[in-house]
Length: 225
Image (tube, rainbow, N blue to C red; front, side, top):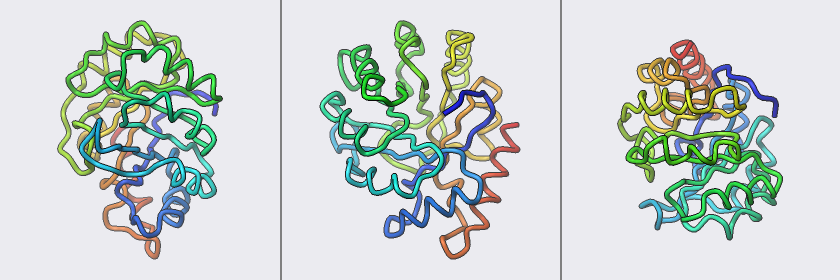
């Protein structure tokens, strides 16, 4: 991965056809996705269950861009090696998921992955001020995590605060939740460069008819620009 601050669209497979994940990944990449975002939920830290390391490993064979794995689980540390072995390029842990986010980020990098830290809507930007030098990505949640398809919560002021805190560090600001053509300009203007979008990308298309995926991705990218 090379670093740049251009807008990147990261479709969340949480909105894809669960029975056809491999083909969905291939289709959305062919239609212009920059990264593939995988939401891991444990039914404990968030009220839902999704994918574990075996699913991530299976998807790795289909992802040719960047596999961006977002852990909405607690604890995180016991599973870091499993997701490294599964092939995650970026592994993101929530600052709220445990008492030692500094140690967690060290472990993620030590396992050979890029390290991300995520903040829930109620968590201030200041919570990551002292770990930015261990981060490759800060994920700002613009919904309360646990389900796809929720309404956007405006976190523009938090994003702008993080952008100022990051300065010239090579750290991405990712937005996860409710991103579409209406909200993309708000977060991009505030300083975000990675936009996770689920239903806004997959709406209207399918593996058999993937053209709408490309139309949706281009529309979000254009809106953010």
